[in-house]
Length: 481
Image (cartoon, rainbow, N blue to C red):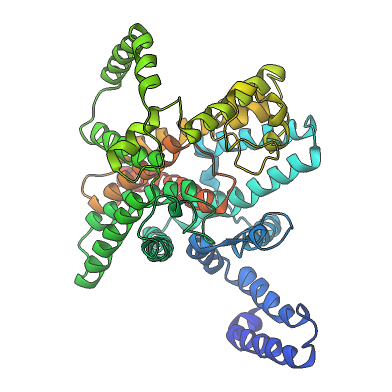
């Protein structure tokens, strides 16, 4: 093993050369010459697991779903094969020595995620199609095991957090720049905004969600420390490109999630008491209840469509539940999810089964011009109602518990972190706001079953776990003195 590691790059070069020779001897076979390259990937993953981990992070924004090119199942390459392989290697390695840190057991995030996975397994057994549900479980495992569990040990070193930010933000900016260039060739038309991000993103909804997620990361990274002039220039360019990408995504949920994220930043920054927030929420709720009839009338008169390119009109279209097809289709999907829950309130129809089962729950009066019976136009359009339909009440509550645990750990960690360490404290705030944009977006869409959202979300959760363990170590050292 030591000899192999010491001569690793010679071995990699030899395998790559073998692959080139393979094209000469097996020119009529596409796959045989790829074997040496597959061995290279296996070798790097085995002996340089951390490099593989960061490579996955870097290529996530640029991964491509092979379903777009073939009639086969959906699979994002190169990320998902690498995640699956890394998961297997980590589990095998963990049999011989500890790969996953002991402090995982001290994290509320980990406990809620483990409970969620156990419930996914249980409801897979009671599912309408156990095989499909077990595939759903496997796909979630290859995100959670390498990114959340293993990532929490990688991010224990603060410099690795900066690696994550530079790698993920850089390739995300590449994807945004590509989209803007493509969009500019169509004069930033609204219709074209739905597909110009292809092949890196399926449509403007997931693209907008990820652009909204990176905006707080870029700003917090810029203000976290004194950078070199070159780094400052690069981050300013990143800010400009990300804000352009956000605006021209024409995604209302993304715009609103960033706005609410700013409100959350103000609440945390100025330490607004929870009792005050509950009081304000109670007053707002009471006002909505008293004024509901007039609010419904105003929404019925709202004729603004989401197809407009004007910013103000597009935001106003978010409350158009009369003519806006996008809003009406969401209501259709949400209604189906609730009706599915009513039929099977405890165990649901099985993880990953919503798309195959919801058609018969559609009411004729809820159908829109974009409705379909084939499950090919999205899912339940909610990170919370999807689990409700697929895994029953406990499924939705377990998802909500994960969200609560994430923000509980993030906010308490931010408040407990030493003020002197401005860099980490600023980054923590950025991670909290970034995650808030995603989970606010989660009321309207669900993307955690894709690498685009799962990798950055679970990475930031892993950072929370790692920094909490680091803070505990720092406190013990201080008390020891």
